[in-house]
Image (cartoon, rainbow, N blue to C red; front, top):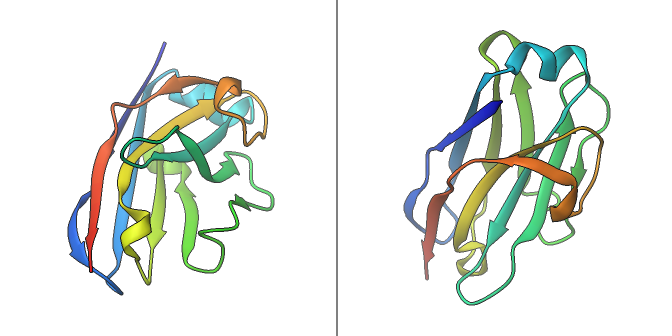
Length: 126
């Protein structure tokens, strides 16, 4: 079983930055050797969960949703079993609960991710 725990959310102003962290435990070693993909999703108030960014544990090109491309950066620290989402130039429309998730293949689809964290709230005030 894989456990994911997000941290780093908060209330910020437009233009500020935040870095979210997602610590993986349980079968974390297998996530690296099996090439699991780590994704960040977000769920704005009253809307469906949507893809934000994804990165394979084994490396490769990260994927970003168009609304965050150029502002958000996903990265990982294999030694710490942790994946990060650096969010710069935040906008009010970035307000959402942000979730970390793990999948066995690189994907933007919510349904492809089997493991999820509990989420962390990010609120951007105007």
